Each structure stands twice: as structure tokens, then as C-alpha cells.
Image 1 (cartoon, rainbow, N blue to C red):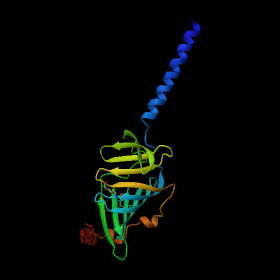
Image 2: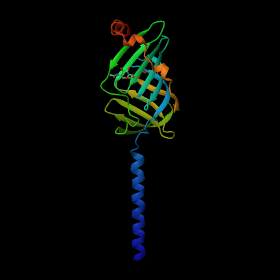
Image 3: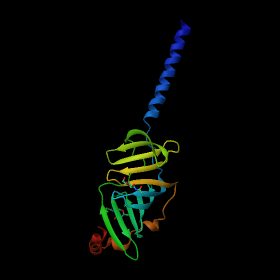
Amino acid sequence: MKLNLKFLCLTSLILLLMSCTASSTSNPTPTPWPEQFHALLYMNLSDARLQLSDLWYDWPRGRNVNIFTRQLIGDILYDVEWDNGTSYYFTLEPNPTCRAMEFGVGIPRPDFLNDANYLGTQVTDGFLCHVWEKVDFIWYYEDVITKRPVRWDFYDGISSHVITYEVGAVLPDSVTQAPALCFNQDDHKAIATSFK
Ligand SMILES: *[C@@H]1O[C@H](CO)[C@@H](O)[C@H](O)[C@H]1NC(C)=O
Ligand SMILES: *[C@@H]1O[C@H](CO)[C@@H](O)[C@H](O)[C@H]1NC(C)=O
């Protein structure tokens, strides 16, 4: 009788442990972004045009930078987003342009996907991934084994595929400085239309 009880306790303990591991693997949470990283992204835009983006995420410096190269257009478009809600989109010589924009929100926190909905696993770009969705805004694919992001899609049809992923890489400050043009109200108004 005593032995039986012991056995029962042991089996219920094992069952409990098993259900704990089962529920934690069936509902994984996304790996937080490293505080600083550089990723080269292959992007398929909503009109199926392609571009590359050098993404430099830097939480301690409060900035998120995308440097876009559009396929066979050749200009380099800088998108420097600051955590205070200001973003600068600019091109440099020989065709300098700038558009400054105020957004109500800052850059994504490293754990911005914490409350995303888990959708299960899926193979994308040849990698087995966990997939999450957040507020019908982003669909995020993370490699099951390496925990690196593989792909994310936005609601507007833009799909980004991670080609390289360097944790800890930091963009020099000089690259993030918006040109003087951005701070001249008249110029910036005149130039704004050339972006459309
Ligand atoms: C880009 O996305 C569109 C729409 O999903 C798709 O039809 C097209 O094949 C994609 N192009 C490339 C090069 O991945
Ligand atoms: C936010 O920070 C950037 C970079 O330091 C600066 O240029 C911009 O004026 C700031 N915006 C606001 C609203 O303070």
C-alpha cells in the first residue's frame, strides 16, 4: 500500500513535468532582439519590386536605421528612425533629398513580440520556423534551432528575408547624421514631392 502510494506520487509528478514541458514547447515566445545587430535583408515590396536593406538596430542609442538599395534604381535611401518618434528619409549627393516625419511612437523594443500570437511551425526559405503574428501587423518567422529571425511580413505586403545576421554590430554615428537639407523647412517642403 505504501509502495503504491509512492508509485502514484511518482507517476503524477512525471505527468506534471511532462505537461509542463509540453505546454512550454507548444507555445514558445519569440527570442527578444539583441540590443544591437546588423542584418542584411532581401525585401519583396508590395508591388513585387525588390530591394536590399541594411538594417542596423541599436536599442541603447535609440535608433533603427534602414539603408535601402532598390533593384536597378541605384540610389541609396536612408531611413533613420529615432526613439523620440522622429524619422529622416534621405538620399545624398548627387541627388540629395530629405523628408522628416514625426511618428507618435519610437523604435521597437527588443521584446516587442512578447505578446504575439503563436501560429505554429512552418518551413520558409528552407528553414523550419516558429511563426507568430501580432495585431494583424506583422508575421514573424524564427528558426526553431538557431532562434535567429528568418523572415517577417508586414500587413501591407512587404516581405523581408534575413540574409546575414550579426549580433552586436554597430553603425558609426556619422552615417546616421541626417544632412543639413533635412533641417531647412523650405527646402524640405520643396523636396518632399520628389519622393512620391
Ligand atoms: C514577391 O512577392 C510576390 C507576391 O507575393 C510573388 O508573386 C513574387 O514571386 C515574389 N518575388 C520574389 C522575387 O520573391
Ligand atoms: C529626435 O532625435 C533626433 C536625433 O537626435 C533629432 O534630430 C530630432 O530633432 C529629435 N526630435 C524631437 C521631436 O525631439
